[in-house]
Length: 97
View 1 (cartoon, rainbow, N blue to C red):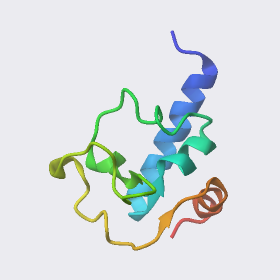
View 2: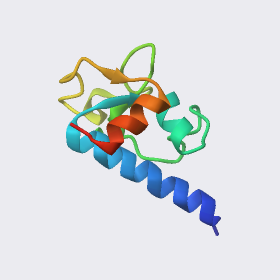
View 3: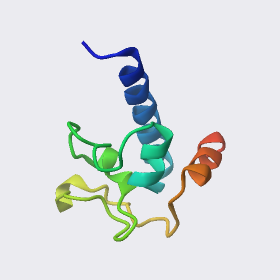
């Protein structure tokens, strides 16, 4: 059984992934992890690698870590900007565009 806190964090992560995917916006593991109170290294642990989740990326490469070409969204590089701080991500999530 998962704790309510873990479930809430997962729901928040799913919501963030949905919004990033909907607006084709990349954000770093660190920025997303800070919002859902998880470690950047374990943020995507246990989750499938898919185009939907490939919007969460490495600060160094601006690409998702450990994904094959088939698992990366074809429009990943559509926007040059990568959101890299939790503050910037919170602001963007309030009014995504």
